[in-house]
Image (cartoon, rainbow, N blue to C red; front, side, top):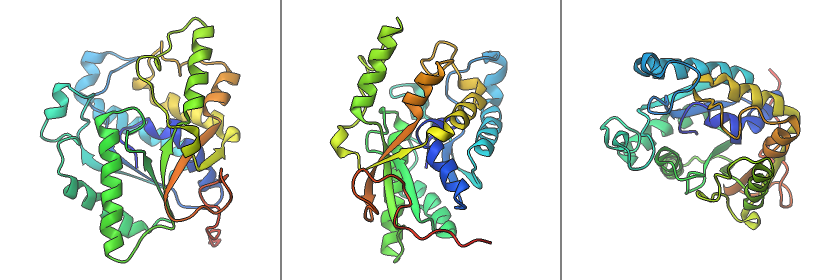
Length: 266
């Protein structure tokens, strides 16, 4: 469960493709179409009226790269950053009643009955209103389905270890680039991480999926045109906190599906 197109590529692109390659069905739910975000690499004035359409197509391409079997939108409008007018738009995800949004997601969960559900931690990773709402909606949907007698084998929060963020900040500074994490500290204490998945073999796929979101690739972003070594160090591991179910191996568990039966061929 993600908030906007491109969110899937960075923090969960590896586990998605890893699951797909293992024969598991991968379903990506995206709350909005990212229509309130900044526009890069194209004429902003001309693109803004059709930005939802542009980013829907970008997400389709990224999903193909990451092995997504089904992608669905919850049907809400991008809320923009906290404190912006987009937050007050009546169609925004931020303004959506929690119960209503949770039922939209619950309907998809009833159809798919996934073994594993993944969303953001309570901070939304970096405090974006739509990320925080994605967390709340996912947990509310799981609560509702638990009352109906169903729950996934496991549920996780995507998380970024604080030590990793601190390292990335130092590397940016060493390269003479600004460290955005000084002003906006993110990351969870390393001891809270329960699961670390090695996705280095899929780093190139993650890079290509991120690049598929052309309208969001700011040329001066710290994720744009990094060295291969930097990209692997930054995105070669994906970290999670298990919040429902039980670990299938000692911490740090090496995969989301440890302890869950392999899919039946055919």
